[in-house]
Image (cartoon, rainbow, N blue to C red; front, side):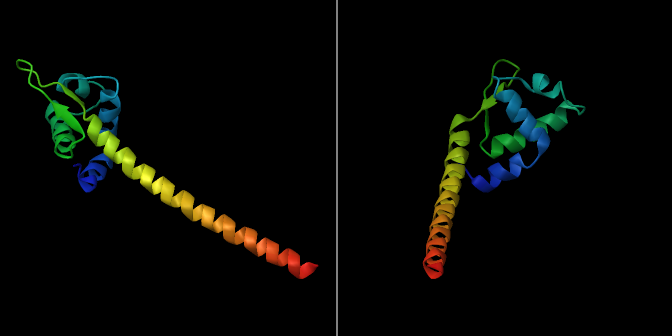
Length: 112
C-alpha cells in the first residue's frame, strides 16, 4: 500500500518529477538520470532515494549498476485517488447544477 503523503511530498520537487518523466520512457541508471541536471551524481542519488522510499520507483542490481524504473502499482494508486477526487468534485457540480435548475424553475413560476 502506497503512503500518499510520502508520494505527494516526493512529487512536490520538480527535479523528482523530471526524473519520473524520464523513467516513464524506460529504465535508466543513475548516470543516465543525472545527465540533464546541473547537479552532482550524489545529489541525484538522494532524489532517487526519496522516490524509492515513497514507493514511486524500484531499483534492481545489475553488476555494479542499479537501474531504476517506475513502480507501476504506485502510479496506479495515485491515479485511483485522483479519480476518486474527480468523481467527488463531479458529484458536487451535479448537485449545484440541480440547485441552480430548481432556482430557475421557481423564478420562472414566480414571473408567470
